[in-house]
Length: 515
Image (cartoon, rainbow, N blue to C red; front, side, top):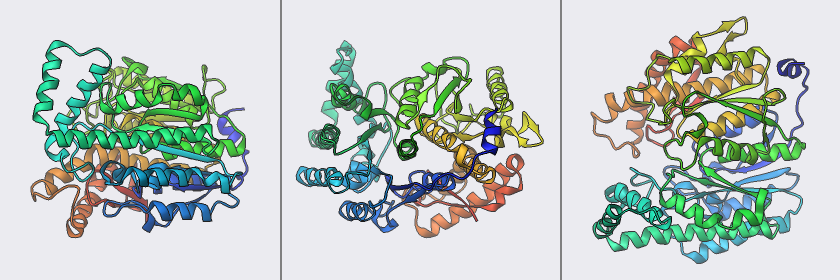
């Protein structure tokens, strides 16, 4: 029996109850993730928006913990962002001024959850403080606006020094950077990283004490040599051996909730889905994408295991066949650059053909489009809609999942997570999830976002990241117009069935929602 024939005989899934405390209220953290599971028949309960971090407020850790405690009865699992429950959200985890005593008290309070609710599995996801190359306030402390690139390079050289790789020229560069970056700024950054590491160590200790069932550590915006890479190595030295399968760490952050909700669901249902991966030609599985510190094959394996699945050696019995569209050269440049053309090269065409073959064989097939950073491949997406079509429609709508947004692991985690949910989705809901991803990841992020910046935000000298309500409204109107002209020739009239908002008053992300 083919996978699709199996789907036709599936009845509705049982409505498990999962509690979910997200990183913040961004669509990828909250709305998109929750919508995926609710469409799959899962009851996902989330805290009131007033308690969550947004671009204009920090979350409320104490009240979030109270909410978690109040809703625990009858839950089949709780998936929680420890950043939200300890710092107040992802951005506050980098910018807070909290004393160690407060962080320790909140960590202990979270780890006491299972004392009250021993029958509710507690799955936590946390982030190792990131090492951005070009970031600035308000996503980081204010001094990043002036010293961001130098702080990154300083951390990279410190990491190389730790590994004994520092060359004579680099030693001089390190000394120069330490002379150029004020001592109080270097101290503040290292103090923040130390607090973060202390919290993560205490959470890891909770695994050994039975206070936490699983801990997933995301290395947000890392690099092969960076402070984030250094912190992960220091933290995981001995920890992963002590706790084994209870702890995983990989590059990424915004997809962690999607990944752990899959784990909670698989554990509640007693299932271990098999996932088989194939890659584009060239560098393929050895690709180390931008913002990451390890080969994509490592990230893929860790994502699958964290989601409660298992990496399959062969494709024959896989519950999900995941195509990972890597850049032939192994270098992920920005999706908004001239390199992201409409022309699909020969390796890309063969990748598309292989994807089509899996679909025609009846396999549940997903695509993680990571050829570019911060957006999908124009050539691949257009190939999915023009390269093959039958009575069921274009290949792009016969997939189980697609994702191509932000970092490689963000895309990988979403393509994996939504692909694993396909057996529980109606055809209409599956296509709706796919449409949102094509509109967001490809149409907006790869194309419209840059056009809106060039035609409106930059000429007006607006601060992208702190748009006023009026500026946001103007930008949203232009987004609406651009989405129609960009996406309608590929996706058709359904583009008009969705609305487009900029919820964080910046152009970095869009909220795509059916009207």
